[in-house]
Image (cartoon, rainbow, N blue to C red; front, side):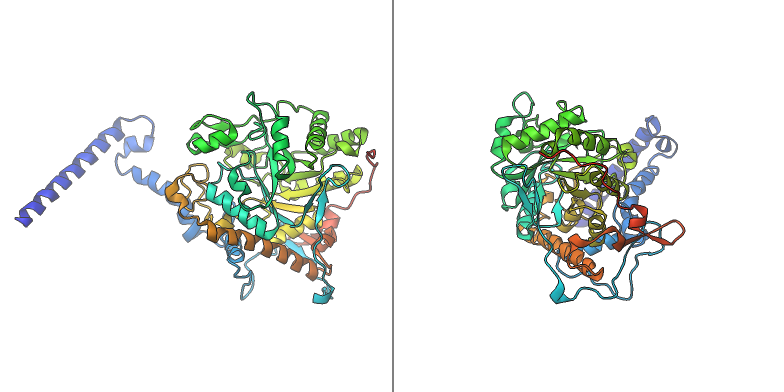
Length: 494
């Protein structure tokens, strides 16, 4: 009896399979969208299957440790080790090719700094002398802007708690301040995006009342003009990721794409930008900065000229310079690939412009854009940055595996998804410690590089401590590539 039943079930399954294949065959040869399927029905689906899986096969089986983009396996593994507190130690030599153009080489001192000669890397204040409540930032490495919405609630909670342990700040991103940002009690920088999410009134305009409320918990405000992933276009949060909670925080409709304007409607010139900076600073008593990608020299030229005429009280308290290689959020590929300068070129030019116009001591500089390793962060300090922001470095610390699904709401590690089933992968009680470990260990390695260069702490690094490999495979000192300029004129004091 059982044999007859099994035979009947097997026959039905085979028949169902044949009918399914027949239906697929007819659908393929009659559809007009895919040429391959019209000529090769059924088997043509294998092409799309392997194409979809190709990037994952390459990641694990075919690409070398230093070949992948945007981050190679060696870099990701280094972050994972630091986040797990396993140390950044390797054996039998490095796989980093010192002959490739762009390779970083630090100039080791013949007599490096002894343990007893080392000094703690000093904290730096933002807005000191220009606002009622300056922000004293302790960590060189900090959490870059990642909105709640772009990343999940467990990810934000882990970042907040980890940042508090490590003593670094956390930027809210343009999606507004959520309860999860406040959970850990870390220093918060409130980003004011082009859509004014979290700081707008019922009509969508910047709200003085809301700014005053936020000033009670935010250490500083950051006016976002653009970001490296998509300069010239506002933030994009696909509708599938706009939950009821996120919609309420942002003041938008649930389930619909959240697309910010490509610029602030109330800021159309450098003078208007400086006026807005001064207004928010006077209103809140907090430092106010600007985040922007750099496409040329116009922005810095206009900033220096306008601040020189108006006075230092109108200058931003800090500038966050995002390189064109930034990109933790969803972005059109045309902009992600081709818009704005790399941080390698933008950062030296920005620092030079501040020196030339006499603004360098007034304006703190924060560098951002694939600066996830201690070597890249130390390079930024040597160029002239005061701090480093990273988003994807902290995402790796949270467990990100570079699945490239951030915008699809199907992140397998729970970092960028709002599906509760997938969020189970991100255990806050474990991941917040990895966030803290990553931050503290990178800060520690930056100091280690500085001591090897013969300086007492990381803020003493200068351009002559770094050499960059050129196309002829010979290196050249950074101070030869970008010599320090002479100040042209000083901005008028407040």
